[in-house]
Image (cartoon, rainbow, N blue to C red; front, side):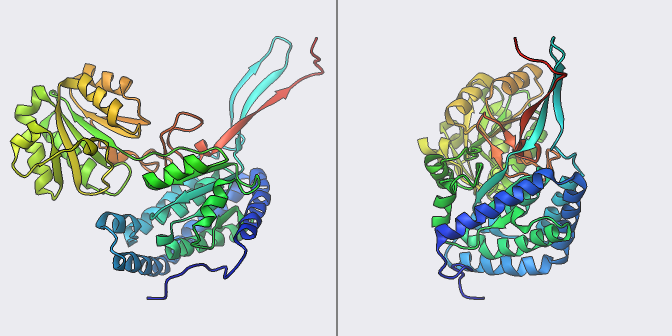
Length: 430
């Protein structure tokens, strides 16, 4: 393994370096805003081909990153988030292809109306400009963010986690190759070429007006820092304290399948379920099979008194457990008095990310979907569908849990703003 990388820019003046990156990105954004859809799609096609052709190189770089964090004592969940496999690289390439295939949002007229004076007013989608994406561990975010911003006509400055530095560089080379093949400026997708954490602070400061919006993708501490320090707008992405509520009307086989997938498919993703809520009216038949299934699958269950009585292997849940995003094979479980109590628990402890109900009772399902104030709510489906690719967006930058501008998976359309075009025939205002 090569020596740990600190930076590839030597002893460069970091503020000057970052300001220069922003200046180049701003110039690239002006080009992209006017680039025809066909040119952007040529770049995306070339990026997909480059990722597939350079899969071995990406895997080799990732192996070095993984070896370094493993030697540093990283948790299995963290290592899983960092690790790339041939299947995950294939999914990355397929995501690029899907983004290429979606309609170009730039220039779309979303509304049009005529005023009594004869003027026609149109609301038209336009790029945001320069987007700063700050992310941790998952190197695939470099590709997802890069291609989504490109599709939406934005330049992007990517600041990946120090632990995925080599992986992100290998992926970024593919992105740059695609831009070159389509005769688009390479500064349209910029990777911050240093592990220096001071680069994050400079991005949060806006780089002298060089960044229009920040998108954080990472753990609670990163998001908290971004929201505390950012001097530009932020697409909020809070932790995923996600719930699955199993109603008394649920089919047990379906509930078992959904709960197991929601928790154990990939424990380290933000869409993983962290709390299981079981309706007291159905607990006699549903609780024990669900708890035993999770434990036998290797999941630690921390439960309230009712859950502990079901199985001696259940550990007592503390107050903190109801508010914890484990990102690991651990789940909190409690018995609640019906859908109203489940909603109340989610309102108090949830993070407004993703929550699911398993139920055959249409009234209970409708109440849950209407009253749970989360970015994504599901009926009879796993929380692991909280993903832009699964929504048909091809990829996502993250799941926005705020209520301004974008909410839920942030895809290409969500990376645009709008302006009004007004067509007149000589009107003046009285």
